[in-house]
Structure formats: C-alpha cells, structure tokens
Image 1 (tube, rainbow, N blue to C red):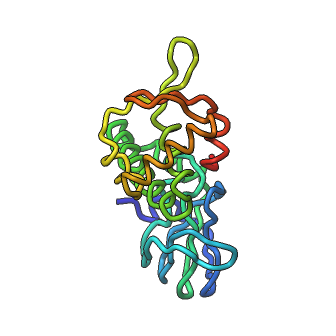
Image 2 (image 1 turned 90 degrees about the vertical axis):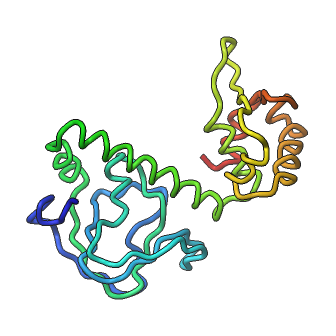
Length: 207
C-alpha cells in the first residue's frame, strides 16, 4: 500500500472547502492528490452540479491515482462533500516513485489500474452517453483493421451479452445498429460489422 509520506514527504498541503472541484473529467492533472481527511464525491458533472454520482471516498486514500499510474486524463469529476485536507504530489514525482518498485510489482499495479480504469470508463459512459454514443464507442474499441485497411468488428458474443455491457436492452442495441447502418456509419448484418466511417463513429462517441 502506498502512503503519502513514503511517496512525497514534502508534498504540498492544501485545504479545500465543501463544494470545491478537485478533479475535472477528461483533463490531465499536473499532480496526484492524497486525501488526508474529508469526503469526496466522484461522478459526472453537468455545469456546476454533480449530475451523476458514482460513489464517495473518505480519507485517508489516494484520489484517482489510477490515472496517474497509467499517465492518462482523469476519468471522473471529483467534488469535496466536506472540507477536505489534501497533499498534492507532482505526477512526474509520483511516477518516479513507482519506477523504484520491482518489475513484477509494477506489472501487477499497471494491470490492476487498467482493470479499474476500464470499469470506471464503462460506468461513466453509461451515465454520460446515450445508447448510440455507447454503441459507437464499443465498436471502435473492439474494431480490428483488415488487410485492405477496413476496420471491422467480429461479434464473438451474443447481442444480449453486448447489450448488457452497454447497459441497454437487446432490442435497443438492434435499433441502434440499424440506425448506424442507415446513416452509413457501419455495414454488414451478420457476425462481421464493417466500420464504414470511423471518423463519424468517433464524433458520435465523443472520443
């Protein structure tokens, strides 16, 4: 378990008032925050309001350290539910401290962080995106490029299973795929779906 004093004994201390925005979704923070005390809500903001809350964390704990481990932008918004006390560690310093770990420990940490990130992204996607956007994102994530440069998805799972992953009904998935075909974003009606317009799908997915 990583503790703030071990990672950065001279980390900057900060006190934030209730309602303060501590992390912004899809933005790469220059530091990693260790929550010494207080409660923080995690979720998806709409304007100044936490529209969709995924959960809360109570200090002491690291706040969204997964993004720093993977060197990626924050996956959620974070808002102080109470007054909180933080210690802020520069991301570069945080990542240097991880490099001192053994190679096997770094591999385990990376794999755990990646699994957590994927679950968090799926949860955020279900909250923040409509069915078409979720489906477009799923298609892009599972696409492979063929010999002729065409991106395609081989449906190795039943549609019911795919729909469950997306948090929608199987009937909704069928309707969405039909709409994507009608808009010439995809083609094919069997187990192989061709991504005719990957750029259009990215725009729809917001990625």
